[in-house]
Amino acid sequence: MSHLPYTLEDDDPSAPPMGLIVLQTDETIEPEFQRYFSGHKSPLFASRIRSAAEVTTENLSAMAADLRVAADLLPKARQFGVVGYGCTSASSVIGSQKVEELVRQGCDTAAVTNPLRAAVACAQNFGISRVALLSPYIEEVSAPLRAAFAGEGVEMPVFGSFGVAEESKVVRISNESVVEAATRLGSDSGVEGVFISCTNLRTFEALKTVQDRLGKPVLSSNQSLAWHMQKLVGG
Image (tube, rainbow, N blue to C red; front, side):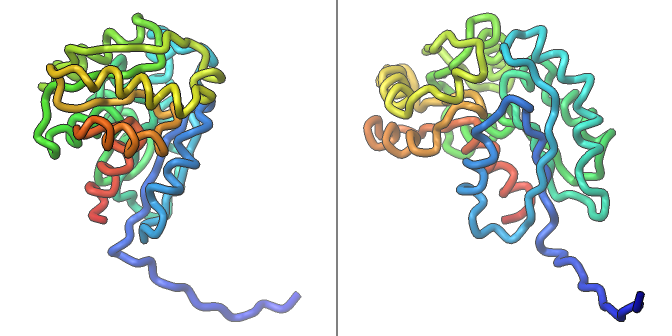
Protein backbone atom coordinates (compact mmCIF):
# COMPACT_ATOMS: atom_id res chain seq x y z
CA MET A 1 0.00 0.00 0.00
CA SER A 2 1.25 3.48 -0.89
CA HIS A 3 0.89 6.27 1.67
CA LEU A 4 -0.26 9.28 -0.35
CA PRO A 5 0.20 12.92 0.65
CA TYR A 6 -2.79 15.07 1.59
CA THR A 7 -3.59 18.47 3.01
CA LEU A 8 -6.28 19.55 5.47
CA GLU A 9 -8.69 22.40 4.89
CA ASP A 10 -9.54 24.84 7.66
CA ASP A 11 -13.13 25.01 8.85
CA ASP A 12 -14.97 28.22 8.06
CA PRO A 13 -15.19 30.09 11.40
CA SER A 14 -18.15 32.08 10.10
CA ALA A 15 -20.18 28.90 9.57
CA PRO A 16 -20.31 27.00 12.88
CA PRO A 17 -22.22 23.73 12.71
CA MET A 18 -25.77 23.39 14.00
CA GLY A 19 -27.12 20.34 15.78
CA LEU A 20 -30.65 18.98 15.86
CA ILE A 21 -32.02 16.31 18.20
CA VAL A 22 -34.91 14.61 16.42
CA LEU A 23 -37.54 12.34 17.94
CA GLN A 24 -37.41 8.74 16.76
CA THR A 25 -41.05 9.04 15.65
CA ASP A 26 -40.66 12.38 13.84
CA GLU A 27 -41.03 12.19 10.05
CA THR A 28 -41.49 15.92 9.41
CA ILE A 29 -38.84 18.14 10.96
CA GLU A 30 -35.91 16.98 8.81
CA PRO A 31 -37.59 17.46 5.40
CA GLU A 32 -39.02 20.82 6.54
CA PHE A 33 -35.62 21.93 7.86
CA GLN A 34 -34.08 21.10 4.48
CA ARG A 35 -36.35 23.80 3.08
CA TYR A 36 -35.91 26.30 5.91
CA PHE A 37 -32.11 26.00 5.81
CA SER A 38 -31.72 25.81 2.03
CA GLY A 39 -28.69 27.91 1.15
CA HIS A 40 -27.57 28.42 4.76
CA LYS A 41 -23.80 28.15 5.04
CA SER A 42 -23.67 26.36 8.41
CA PRO A 43 -23.89 22.56 8.19
CA LEU A 44 -26.73 20.89 10.09
CA PHE A 45 -26.18 17.55 11.85
CA ALA A 46 -28.98 15.48 13.37
CA SER A 47 -29.12 12.92 16.16
CA ARG A 48 -32.14 10.81 17.13
CA ILE A 49 -33.67 10.34 20.56
CA ARG A 50 -35.96 7.49 21.59
CA SER A 51 -39.61 8.50 21.75
CA ALA A 52 -42.84 6.61 22.27
CA ALA A 53 -45.40 6.01 19.53
CA GLU A 54 -48.09 7.59 21.72
CA VAL A 55 -47.73 11.09 23.14
CA THR A 56 -48.49 11.38 26.86
CA THR A 57 -46.94 13.56 29.56
CA GLU A 58 -45.33 10.45 31.06
CA ASN A 59 -43.70 9.47 27.75
CA LEU A 60 -42.59 13.04 27.10
CA SER A 61 -41.00 13.32 30.52
CA ALA A 62 -39.14 10.04 29.99
CA MET A 63 -37.10 11.59 27.16
CA ALA A 64 -35.09 13.56 29.72
CA ALA A 65 -33.19 10.37 30.51
CA ASP A 66 -31.91 10.11 26.91
CA LEU A 67 -31.24 13.74 26.03
CA ARG A 68 -27.60 13.74 27.13
CA VAL A 69 -26.94 10.54 25.18
CA ALA A 70 -28.58 11.92 22.03
CA ALA A 71 -26.51 15.10 22.26
CA ASP A 72 -23.37 13.03 22.84
CA LEU A 73 -23.89 11.31 19.47
CA LEU A 74 -23.43 14.58 17.57
CA PRO A 75 -19.99 15.11 15.94
CA LYS A 76 -17.23 16.22 18.32
CA ALA A 77 -14.71 17.92 16.02
CA ARG A 78 -16.05 21.47 16.47
CA GLN A 79 -18.13 23.48 18.88
CA PHE A 80 -21.72 23.84 17.69
CA GLY A 81 -23.13 27.28 17.17
CA VAL A 82 -26.51 26.03 18.36
CA VAL A 83 -28.24 22.75 19.14
CA GLY A 84 -32.01 22.48 18.86
CA TYR A 85 -34.13 19.88 20.65
CA GLY A 86 -37.04 19.11 18.35
CA CYS A 87 -39.98 18.54 20.66
CA THR A 88 -42.38 21.29 21.70
CA SER A 89 -44.48 19.36 24.20
CA ALA A 90 -41.54 17.62 25.89
CA SER A 91 -39.82 20.97 26.30
CA SER A 92 -42.85 22.20 28.25
CA VAL A 93 -42.92 19.07 30.43
CA ILE A 94 -39.16 18.80 31.06
CA GLY A 95 -38.56 22.56 31.09
CA SER A 96 -36.41 24.60 28.71
CA GLN A 97 -33.65 25.16 31.28
CA LYS A 98 -33.40 21.45 32.10
CA VAL A 99 -33.35 20.62 28.38
CA GLU A 100 -30.44 23.01 27.92
CA GLU A 101 -28.53 21.55 30.86
CA LEU A 102 -28.92 17.99 29.56
CA VAL A 103 -27.92 18.89 26.00
CA ARG A 104 -24.83 20.73 27.25
CA GLN A 105 -23.81 17.65 29.23
CA GLY A 106 -23.61 15.73 25.97
CA CYS A 107 -22.04 18.22 23.55
CA ASP A 108 -20.11 21.47 23.27
CA THR A 109 -22.44 24.18 22.01
CA ALA A 110 -22.65 27.94 22.24
CA ALA A 111 -26.45 27.91 22.49
CA VAL A 112 -29.38 25.54 23.01
CA THR A 113 -32.97 26.08 21.98
CA ASN A 114 -36.23 24.19 21.50
CA PRO A 115 -39.58 24.98 19.83
CA LEU A 116 -41.09 26.41 23.04
CA ARG A 117 -38.20 28.77 23.68
CA ALA A 118 -38.00 29.59 19.98
CA ALA A 119 -41.71 30.34 19.62
CA VAL A 120 -41.62 32.71 22.60
CA ALA A 121 -38.69 34.54 21.00
CA CYS A 122 -40.51 34.60 17.66
CA ALA A 123 -43.69 35.98 19.23
CA GLN A 124 -41.65 38.70 20.92
CA ASN A 125 -40.06 39.50 17.58
CA PHE A 126 -43.54 40.03 16.12
CA GLY A 127 -44.65 41.98 19.19
CA ILE A 128 -47.53 39.63 20.01
CA SER A 129 -48.44 38.12 23.38
CA ARG A 130 -51.95 36.67 22.87
CA VAL A 131 -52.09 33.83 20.37
CA ALA A 132 -54.39 30.98 19.44
CA LEU A 133 -52.92 27.52 19.91
CA LEU A 134 -53.53 24.67 17.47
CA SER A 135 -52.24 21.36 18.81
CA PRO A 136 -52.63 17.84 17.44
CA TYR A 137 -52.51 16.34 20.92
CA ILE A 138 -54.83 15.40 23.76
CA GLU A 139 -55.60 17.84 26.59
CA GLU A 140 -53.18 16.09 28.96
CA VAL A 141 -50.32 17.18 26.71
CA SER A 142 -51.65 20.57 25.64
CA ALA A 143 -52.38 21.91 29.14
CA PRO A 144 -48.75 22.04 30.33
CA LEU A 145 -47.77 23.57 26.99
CA ARG A 146 -50.19 26.46 27.45
CA ALA A 147 -48.99 26.89 31.02
CA ALA A 148 -45.36 26.99 29.90
CA PHE A 149 -46.12 29.67 27.30
CA ALA A 150 -48.05 31.69 29.88
CA GLY A 151 -45.02 31.50 32.18
CA GLU A 152 -43.00 33.15 29.42
CA GLY A 153 -45.56 35.93 28.87
CA VAL A 154 -47.43 34.44 25.90
CA GLU A 155 -51.11 33.85 26.69
CA MET A 156 -53.19 31.36 24.71
CA PRO A 157 -56.83 32.25 25.41
CA VAL A 158 -58.03 30.38 22.31
CA PHE A 159 -57.15 26.72 21.98
CA GLY A 160 -58.09 23.88 19.66
CA SER A 161 -56.81 20.35 19.15
CA PHE A 162 -57.17 17.45 16.75
CA GLY A 163 -57.16 15.18 19.82
CA VAL A 164 -54.63 12.73 18.39
CA ALA A 165 -52.14 10.82 20.55
CA GLU A 166 -50.48 8.58 17.93
CA GLU A 167 -47.47 10.14 16.20
CA SER A 168 -48.02 8.04 13.07
CA LYS A 169 -51.37 9.80 12.62
CA VAL A 170 -50.12 13.29 13.55
CA VAL A 171 -47.63 13.34 10.69
CA ARG A 172 -50.38 12.42 8.23
CA ILE A 173 -52.90 15.11 9.19
CA SER A 174 -53.68 16.88 5.92
CA ASN A 175 -52.56 20.37 4.98
CA GLU A 176 -56.20 21.29 4.41
CA SER A 177 -57.10 20.24 7.95
CA VAL A 178 -54.27 22.34 9.40
CA VAL A 179 -55.21 25.38 7.32
CA GLU A 180 -58.90 25.22 8.18
CA ALA A 181 -58.32 24.65 11.90
CA ALA A 182 -55.69 27.38 12.23
CA THR A 183 -57.84 29.85 10.30
CA ARG A 184 -60.84 29.11 12.50
CA LEU A 185 -58.90 29.59 15.73
CA GLY A 186 -56.99 32.65 14.53
CA SER A 187 -60.18 34.40 13.43
CA ASP A 188 -60.99 35.14 17.08
CA SER A 189 -60.66 38.88 17.67
CA GLY A 190 -59.05 38.24 21.05
CA VAL A 191 -55.81 36.91 19.58
CA GLU A 192 -52.98 38.60 17.70
CA GLY A 193 -51.66 35.50 15.96
CA VAL A 194 -51.59 31.71 15.82
CA PHE A 195 -49.11 29.09 17.00
CA ILE A 196 -49.32 25.62 15.42
CA SER A 197 -47.60 23.22 17.78
CA CYS A 198 -45.68 19.97 17.13
CA THR A 199 -42.56 19.34 15.03
CA ASN A 200 -44.17 16.25 13.51
CA LEU A 201 -47.17 18.16 12.16
CA ARG A 202 -46.62 19.28 8.57
CA THR A 203 -46.99 23.07 8.52
CA PHE A 204 -44.54 24.41 5.92
CA GLU A 205 -47.17 24.80 3.20
CA ALA A 206 -49.93 25.94 5.58
CA LEU A 207 -48.31 28.96 7.22
CA LYS A 208 -48.51 31.47 4.40
CA THR A 209 -52.03 30.44 3.45
CA VAL A 210 -53.31 30.96 7.00
CA GLN A 211 -51.40 34.22 7.40
CA ASP A 212 -52.82 35.58 4.16
CA ARG A 213 -56.33 34.68 5.30
CA LEU A 214 -55.99 36.19 8.75
CA GLY A 215 -53.61 39.10 8.25
CA LYS A 216 -51.92 38.01 11.50
CA PRO A 217 -48.58 36.34 12.27
CA VAL A 218 -48.78 32.54 12.09
CA LEU A 219 -46.00 30.55 13.77
CA SER A 220 -45.26 26.85 13.99
CA SER A 221 -42.88 24.67 15.96
CA ASN A 222 -40.58 23.99 13.00
CA GLN A 223 -40.71 27.53 11.61
CA SER A 224 -39.94 29.03 15.04
CA LEU A 225 -37.14 26.58 15.80
CA ALA A 226 -35.51 27.10 12.41
CA TRP A 227 -35.79 30.89 12.76
CA HIS A 228 -34.31 30.88 16.26
CA MET A 229 -31.45 28.54 15.37
CA GLN A 230 -30.47 30.73 12.44
CA LYS A 231 -30.67 33.81 14.64
CA LEU A 232 -28.51 32.22 17.35
CA VAL A 233 -25.90 30.94 14.88
CA GLY A 234 -25.74 34.35 13.24
CA GLY A 235 -27.26 33.69 9.84
